[in-house]
Length: 223
Image 1 (tube, helix red, strand yellow):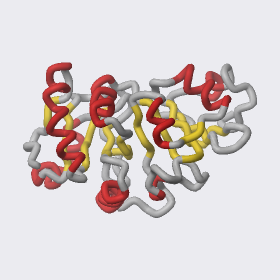
Image 2 (cartoon, rainbow, N blue to C red):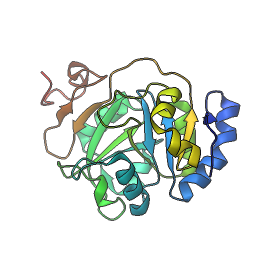
Image 3 (spheres, rainbow, N blue to C red):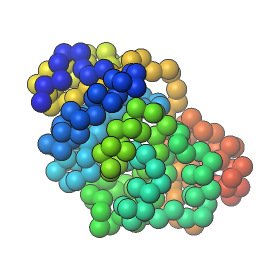
């Protein structure tokens, strides 16, 4: 499914709505989508094993380095069989939607093993990007997510950045590029491991540990 050399407009509400049907068809065929988020441009696809394997192959992702899942509502966590502890729920209630990624246990029957990280959990973020929320809601399932850059290159902050690195894949229709313009510079999402009794920051990011401790005082890491 060819998207054209400049991608699919994904900025205004009418553009977002017009893009949905074609993007859902592309995802249903196992295709990869490049999209804007609240932090950087990402790559993603459906959560079935075949779609995940295609994304792994395209990104040359090493074993043990999984993708995260983007959701548009807490009900998706329940459908995946993931577990929110009381402390994790407190963080989610305050900071979602937004740049906070929670690594959750569970999901053995619903989530591809390739999405499980070294902590044994599944990384999940409720995106605050309105266009992406609309797409995920229309999809009805989470969207996998990894940065849309070649290994060793900086994160992509615009559709132009993605196009310059992946022009052949976009022109061939392997990647469907959703052009949401240029993003404002921001830190990556903060990642918190919620698979153990005491939560732990495993990647500092946009939300400071001091802010997280206002909800979870015994949080470990990123002092």
